[in-house]
Length: 430
Ligand code: AMP
Image 1: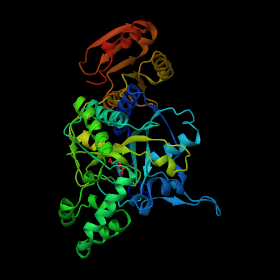
Image 2: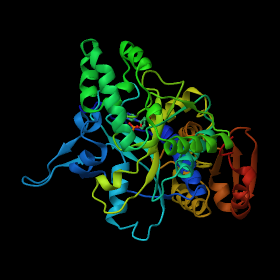
Image 3: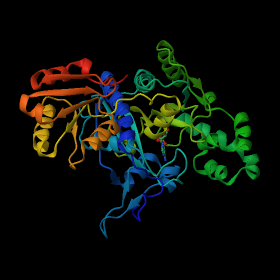
Image 4: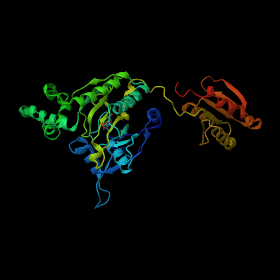
């Protein structure tokens, strides 16, 4: 064992697990394309100010969770990306994507970094996939991102997820509500916990998010943002719900849902999983019309998006038994060389099989025939292909089905043809 261990809050993904990731990623790629989203890949780090401006300095992420460093002694501070939205918007603005008032539909899969206390469901390096619909702000747009996210969940077979949704109004409505909230909580100031006192002062909406039962009790009686919304904002929200109803997407309206980030307006949503403990949020998102201006854009770039945590998604899938029979990268054929002087011929044969697109494995360590057979079973090969003096001399090979022990003898051409037929292939998703 090495004297080194992985850093707390990070983890390794070995091949057996990586196939699960590939499976989810394939579904994400496929459904994103189906909805007209195209992939964007952005740097792992950005200038720190991007996140300070974009996410908001009163949020937990910016306040205490960023990995920031200064690569050059006199240079600007940079930060490992703690979320993707600010970076995606930065990239789109930098490339002037909106000069023609066009709409851009982008999605991503990638790693994020947050200096949180590592615990179940909370890592310091984790992954998300998500989408951003940039350049249009409408109930139809936000309904489209929610629909795509829910569609990915159902394609993966997930059950029992809960979509909570709320409206945060526009900035004017929120400002009036903030004042009302501060006024309402003022008489209770002494019984608030420290975190709530701080939230009330800096970012009052977040007090609604408190997990403390005593605060939750107060929140239940506090004014609701909903009552501060103008007719147009109410209609906007109702339209989003209308689209979800039309598509049979179930949701719960939750007036306390505010989400941690500053940039949301109007619709905000979160999905929780019944399979996770305290950290039960699997994904979320909303509409963020003000972000582009916050990042210095001269034009408005209204937008909506979502992000889903891969690790928590996979934990949920595992608990729901959705990962038991996934594709695996098992070799289809194991070339068993019966005598070592035929190894080079075996290698040539393996090369020919691979050239024909047949997944093939062969021992490179000079193992005995018995050990090669053990190896073929260990890697779950479907067939053993025997190469001995007779096979070499006649050009006919014995192929043994390792599941049924049936054996057939074929010429190389016939064997290639047989192995390329779908019935010879191990079912990928059985
Ligand atoms: P957020 O950007 O905080 O709304 O996070 C979106 C999703 O990313 C969450 O619902 C989680 O599934 C996932 N997530 C956020 N933080 C972490 C973390 N520290 N470790 C693992 N997953 C996380």
